[in-house]
Length: 413
Image (cartoon, rainbow, N blue to C red; front, side, top):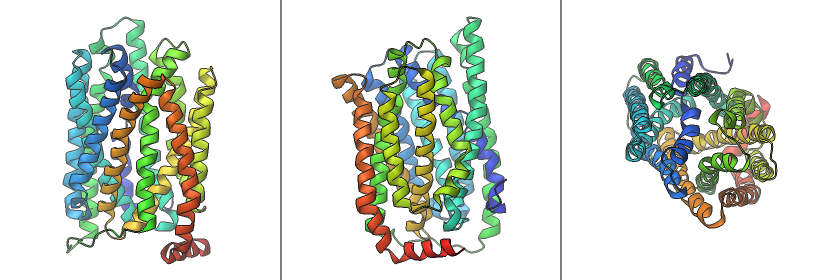
C-alpha cells in the first residue's frame, strides 16, 4: 500500500476497483458491436462515443458546485454508481435485442453515472493530498482502476471466448455485462459508506464556497489542453480497433484484445510510480514530452503489420496518456484553490466536449480520407500540443509565484 496515501482515503480504493471492472471491456466492445451487429457507419460509431461523453459532461456540469460540499458527496457517489449499474443492464438488453436506440441510451447513462462517480472521488483525493505528491496519490486511484480493468477483462474475454467456442447465443456470450452491473451496485454501497465517514470526520460546520475560479494564463491553457488532448484521443478510440480488424487480418475480438489489454492494464497499475516520477519533473516539460511520444507511437502504429508490435506501442501510448492525465489533474486541483469540485466538474465538461467532438470529427475524416484519416489528424494535434506546452505553459509556470513557491517547497522536502 502506498505510504503517502492518507488513511482516510483507503476505504475508497475497493469501490474504485469494483466500479472499474467493465471500464475497458465496454469501451472496447461498443465500436465492435456497432460495426458488426448494427453495421454502423463512421458517423454512427462516432455518435455512440459522443453520447457517452455527453453523459459524462452533463453530470460534471450539473453537480460540480454541489460536490464542493462534503455533505453532498456521499449521496452523489451513490447516485452515480446506481445509474451506472442500470446502464449496464440497458446495454446488455440492447446488444441481445439488436436495438441501436437502446444502446445509445445505455451509453449516455453509462457516461452520466461514471462522471458523477469520478467527480466525487477526484475531489476527495485532491482535497486530502499535498501538492508535492498529488500525482502519486491520483496514481494510486488509477492503479485500483487498472486492477479492476484487469480482473474484469480477464473474466469478460474468458467468458466470451468460451461462449464462441461452444457456439452459444449472444444472451449467454454477453452475460458478463450483468456482472459489471452487480459490481457497480456493490461499489455504490461501499463508496457511500466511505465518503459519508470522511464527511463526518472532516466537516462539522460547512459553508458554500462561492469564490469563482480564477482565470489565468495557466488555467486557460490547462483547460484548452484538456479539450484538444481529449479530442485527439477520442479521434483514435472508436476507429483504431476497426482499422486493425480490417488491415491486420484479425478475425476475432480475442485476438484484437492482445493489442489493447496489456497497455491499458499496465499503464494504470504502474500509475503510482508514474505519478511519483511526474511529481519530480517540471509539469510543462513532462506534458510536452508526453505529447511528442504519443504522436510518435500513433504514427508508428500505422507503419507496422504485427499485432505484437501494436501491443508494445499501445503499452507506451497508454502509459504516456495515463501519466499526462495525472499531471493535468494535479495542476487543475491546485489552480482551483478551495473550489476543487467546481474545477474537476469544469475539467470533466471540457474534456467530454472534446470527447464529443473527437468521434464526430474522426467519423468525418474516416468518410473522407479513409481508415487512416482520424489517426493522422490525431498525430498533428498531439504535435501541436507539445509545441504549446513549451512555448506557453512553461513560461507561465515560471512566472507564477504560487507555482514557483510550490516547486521550491517540493524540492526542499
